[in-house]
Image (cartoon, rainbow, N blue to C red; front, side):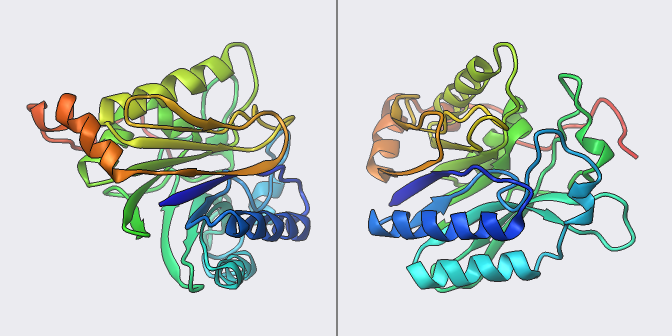
Length: 271
């Protein structure tokens, strides 16, 4: 399977962001991509999240996702993109990844489980955590793809759950907040998630200055297949299932483990 990383530079203009998604999807299709991965908050992003995140949120089947499906169908590619999903009767939104199929169909959605209440941020003021009771995966071009978002990378059981459920590729859509050592954290954690699960691991980040950029695809040995820089761009890489099989023959850690993956109790309660 060929997968494109679309390092988008989202703003507070949804129509502008959709136009950029259209352009990048066209570029990816021109590179024979089967799947195009956009960042977290592809629909709408701000340097400092505030009440507008809730005000612009849309239903799961709203104008933004309808536009995504049209773009996917027009270019014959599957698309993963982050959105703000409205919740009826709630003063918060969901931080959601939406997946449109190459024929313009709905494939899957994932609502962020772990909220970024860290490094002096408080995502839970604006975002309601998912009540998901299992991993979210979909299939494209014979490859099983698992979904995760940004802060999820710091919880290794999230990626292990996806790998145990059959993911060949784990996608992490992110708007990774810049800060001291933050880029190092992202790179080290991504390599760890790829190596310990013997899967391909793809991080699609927002471009600077909102995020760090540096989107990357890692293979099951943690080798960098391809990495983007600081600017908005689209690059396409190969996900090779034979590579996964070869790595697992020498590193069978998924079959050697002696416990069942399960969701762990949290240390605190989120209202």
